[in-house]
Length: 393
Image (tube, rainbow, N blue to C red; front, side):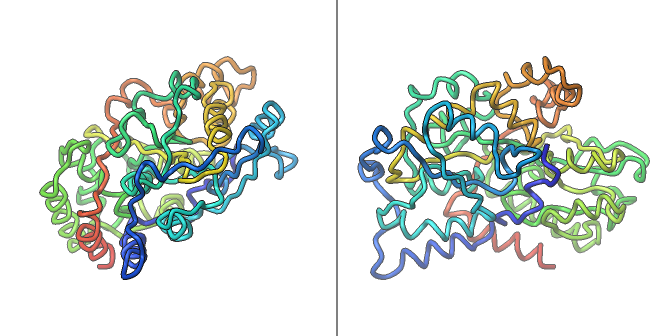
């Protein structure tokens, strides 16, 4: 298993960086950013050129315990298919990667990558801009059969024709039950007087807003601007009262572990890692609900090896392969059938993972999970300005 959570690394903060970069790129003398469907595909070289380039985040794939250069599931795919995979860990931040590939995509040029993994809120931007190819689901029977229904049709990509989850997760609440002395069940529990100055929220707009809306009883699949502004007013007031200690990246992990913070908005995958060293830390999906998110595989426009990429995606949706990946990365597995594979393992530790609701959410938890409607391009600049003003207080 991973001895360090990938989310310790920087993630895109959902601010105005990529929006500003796109605005600059679409300025005077530069072609419009949107790419029509007819201009998205290049002649596929997969049959005669058995390779592909796969860009992912660091620490987001299984590695051999004795040889960190080996990636067992990926090595098995290459051996089985004869397709050579150039695997890069170049994605450290959604906005940064957007800035790296956007000049090529908006100018109808290949990126040099056949498969990329980015967060769903950023995937929404690529889909809106027409920067990714439509997958041939007939060539991906495992995806069609095994993709978790909860992840199958997000607002930005109905039917998941342009994206397939690599791993998933939940943004909920982590807290130190021993130090707090009671359970947290609701988002509003964070606003109780005894937690004043001992609560943190995530600083990224896209990471933070959905759970906060749900805490106000909002259906995040169809939230409105009015819902957002009410939430902003609420959080601004809580900041002024000193209820919220600060807004964080992944450094909330250190605060929770030390006891400086008693409760934090948190990612499920981080908490699994933290619990290994501090069993007093618990993760809760509030009764009002929590956001289910994914980081998804996409095939950028003009990819030279589209069919090879589709084949790799489908390979990772075999339950046996998905189980191997889930056992190492410890995020919510997008292939529920992998649970039975782990449950039948003779390895006690692997079998226990099948019962972990932060990898395979149980029925009660699943009822409280939803994928948020994404922030539209028209909304983003104004919303980010309001949010960032609060984060900077």
